[in-house]
Length: 92
Image 1 (cartoon, rainbow, N blue to C red):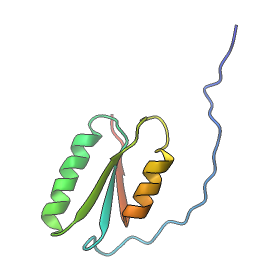
Image 2: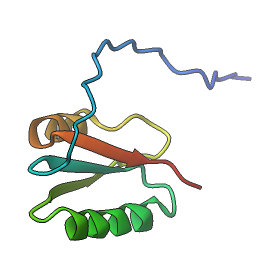
Image 3: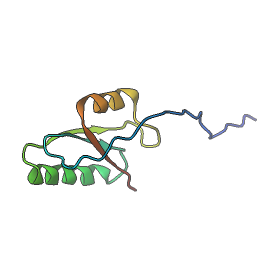
Image 4: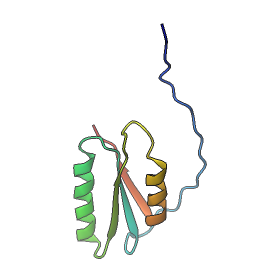
């Protein structure tokens, strides 16, 4: 019999949180979908509301491939390079 452990490898990352911006005007807003229902509906609604409330808002919508894992390196790199702030959501 082969017994498998559900415990994954721990990966430690160091980062410094940025100060919260006073306004979203002129910022590139990232929206990260964790692929759990109904996050996509909620984030699409939020994206629409942001565009209504912040004229000229630029949003970048991306989704993880696997809901139970961290976002892929290329997704995070793209968000880091192309956004100023990031909004994500969890749902079930």
